[in-house]
Length: 364
Image (cartoon, rainbow, N blue to C red; front, side, top):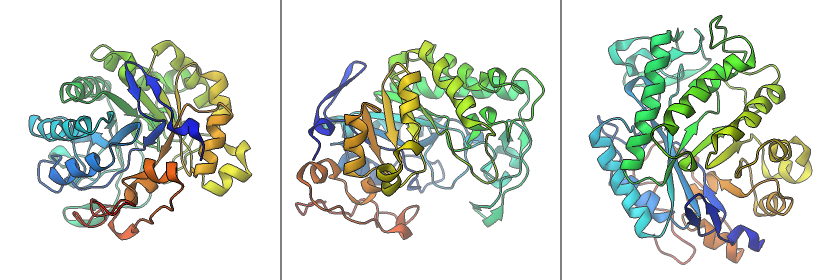
């Protein structure tokens, strides 16, 4: 197995024990009215603390940011107290953990929103599909275009959430700017139909992202702030017409922020990684971006080795393998087979399919 994957890496002031990242994954185990991280989550993250870096599941920055049942927030003292237990557990095991800040935008429903209002979005859109609500599954409705006051408030919410995350013991934060959620909806010309300073050309469409980063950096050292982007993502009919131009501009502009890292999420599988490496945008990102790069999406041990050896990424993020392999670092290092995850418990099931996957040595 590629030894570079297991070498330490200096990320800001933190020395990561290896170059393996646990990718952010929605697991929906905050099964309480306050969306508070609980003891199940403490154990889940503790079990996986051998990762060089853990990026937590998305944590909504405000009540308006909620779009999925049982996903934890980071905007109340009770929620932050819950997260403190998580960060303490990870640090006790020698790990490093960042909190992913999340606003789902229109991927919500009025029953999940304050005052049962329509969800916020860059422009009024109607995402395809359904959403699980307290009243059962319902089709997503039409969102409401954010006013300038909505934009200003949401930017402040990101800044406050970042400051609160650091106060709760996180080593840093990751801004979720990917996968057609709110920030990405401002970026993509297929969803941003505004005719003000936040719409039109890419300079305007990227304004919301950059103002979010500027606000966060006014609260938290930029060396503790990461960003996740997804170039080629299309979801529920939402897309950008020229992603290489759009996201290429953004990646180059990010050099002025001095971020902890740029995390690129790609919709690829291991076979594509090995057989069609030209599909990846990581080579382009390496040329355009000066800082630390994380590659995520469909990695196998072989593709991780290739990505690191070719210099296209500094860190490799694994998602689904971490669901069923809490000891993923040990398994990759030893060449042991990986356990398969049970899809039926990805998003529900309590402890089942969450903290009951054994290590290869037989422990839980």
